[in-house]
Image 1 (cartoon, rainbow, N blue to C red):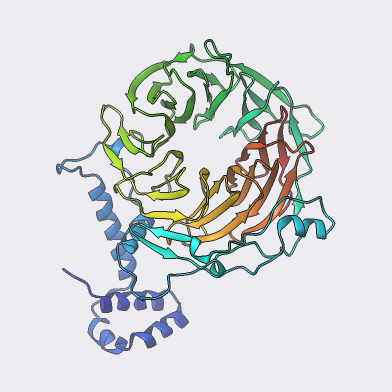
Image 2 (tube, rainbow, N blue to C red):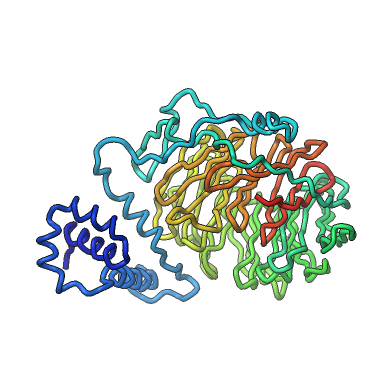
Length: 519
């Protein structure tokens, strides 16, 4: 059975007509030129809704195929990764050659405008905001690499600097200080179930669980979690992570010790000492029964969180920089040296090795909604992956320095799937990973260490300049800014689950939680 392009065009035409898109259907019918003959041949043979029905059946076939292993047997349910239309469409699109034979697809550029700091100061709203517009001099220096080929995107067709907002940039001046640590903060993480509960980690050898007041005049309370190292001088708590149900918080330290606490700050097990180097990655499974840890010693461990015992271990041979679960039994590891592998619980050897990066991978993020992963590395590249392919579906090139952070947008804009990346070059890029397009470049004066999306797709960015800026990810416009008086570096920013607050972990001993102004 085969289907030709004329039949596909006719199915699309029927779908448009049946869905009420009369103008679009009229335009397509005129461009097809053979619509009349197709109508005569297929009008009575194609039922209503046939295009959607065929796509649904194709997706069912993909789901069935995903459950069959390479030997023709049925996979364990925990190994199955749900089928997703978007990765399938993206992969298929990239496997086809460029048919127009000329220019690559381009996004509409935003008009050149003043920098953020120029706009703010000119409006008399605030001191200089330390941002400048993106103005690369070499148009050929920007590329978007889609799998195998390279497409040049002229800088005139990339959104350089957001156009001037219709409303002035708001200021996050309603701030709750988090006072209690004796040294700089490294990370912050909101409880997934309690809107006013947040955890922080510090280089002072402690973590804290904070309860924010419902009324501004009330006091902030906190519980200190003692993570004092037993064998290293460095006291840093390098990782914190909440379980999905919010009942447990795990901490990982520079000395390699893992600790699990309940939400009240009471340690649930003895110190879990397995690693001999700093813990760089710590991820809970979706069901909360396992905790994944990876460290500079090259080891990965899976802990039974109910018993506080080591369930399984792997020696990856090089420092583990990041980890991500992709199902209840499968996870990805990203290592120094650029290796990216897939592992399965119960097996000692990796089940897949990806064509990773030639240099160290710094960050790995998996999007379970569309079953795509992204990596950022010291080679200045961002790569997008499917679990069933060794080669990247997209290679996104624009940054001029190492990639520090990656975040997937939680909400889709139409058929766009947004991914944000930040680098030491001071640039934050917002990409559409389906098309491999660079949508916005958000320029800062110094390195950006952290970024995070709100539930409504606002994007917070911060780093070495000590300023936190919130952007509209769809338009690329800055909408709010926070600048602390001491201007200490910001290492981590996180929106609350409802997007109403933004937490900032800074080099200063005092953390900050800012109320988001109306934007």
